[in-house]
Amino acid sequence: MFDFLQGISPFWWLAFALLLGAIEMVASTTFLLWPAISALVVGVTLFIAPDLSGNLQVLSFAVLSVILAIGGRWVFSRARKGADSGPALNSPAERVVGRRAQVLQGDGTKARVVVDGVRWDAKTDPGQVLKKGDLVVVKSAEGTTLHVAPLDTD
Image (cartoon, rainbow, N blue to C red; front, side, top):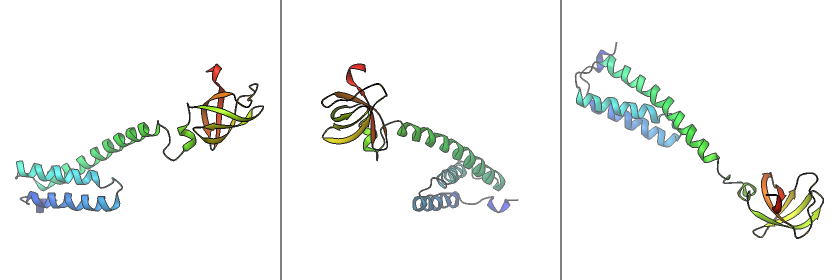
């Protein structure tokens, strides 16, 4: 079926790999990265074994593309999970979680606190009363409201 590839120069596979890589750089989707790497591997293999049949070249390219795409997706998803476990880049409220704050105004379970010179709305669990001057620790953030707890219960 792919007899026309018999005896083809390995440079055609390398050129195909470069073309796919260039398109990938413009698109920046990582979708064409895996076929580009597969074409590169087939091209290098063709340097080593120049009598590789056309069918085997295409089969190698297809199988490698699928394996690399699945493996690459798995690796990238694991890397993304690791990046998401830290404080959110664009969420200043998430970055103050775990920090100490001082209550500026307290009205029962709602308060206004300051963390590193920045004022925040805050709330605490029912049954805990926040008073002006209390030291609290930031437990979590919901939007721009911090969930705090008295420092001595930490």
